[in-house]
Image 1 (cartoon, rainbow, N blue to C red):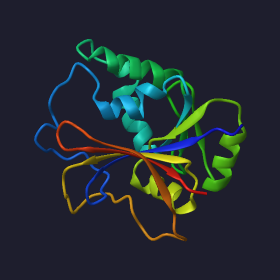
Image 2 (cartoon, helix red, strand yellow):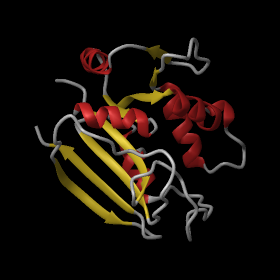
Image 3 (cartoon, rainbow, N blue to C red):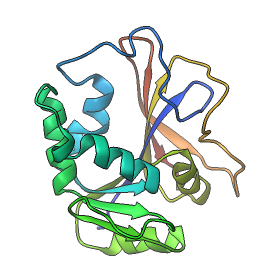
Image 4 (cartoon, helix red, strand yellow):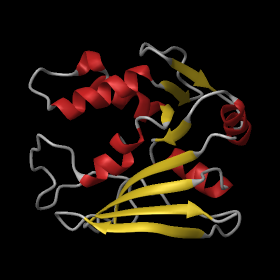
Length: 193
């Protein structure tokens, strides 16, 4: 059985991978929201590998590693940090030369070959949690089995865009859609092959 690859995307309505402010976006919460539950917590037992681009890796290491946690952080963030610390972290980068975070390794080269190698390795499923340029490569090459998308109720018009020209059409099947507390959408699609 091959390992399933899920791409997590966080975007505005117009497809930008940004985290804009909107009413309710900065409400402090001691409990995880529905998107966090669906995209992360519910998958802790079935996932053991996270694929990052360099910037996403550095951002997660600086904010979400257990060493970066503050005592005032909610317990669910400590649980997330423990999950990330024990997970294998694959950093796709041509510039990065070393990693400091435990269970991390850098991979370079052709993305399709890297993905094929990761699928063959023993382990559980894989989440891709990179920025728009990395996610766009997974989309364009049809490398993901499914997609979780958190869509913010904002038309931003600037930033880093997920969508770009495609080599060929990709058809997705909608598995679920949920409207969240502040008008966000949580979408789950699988790739039709």
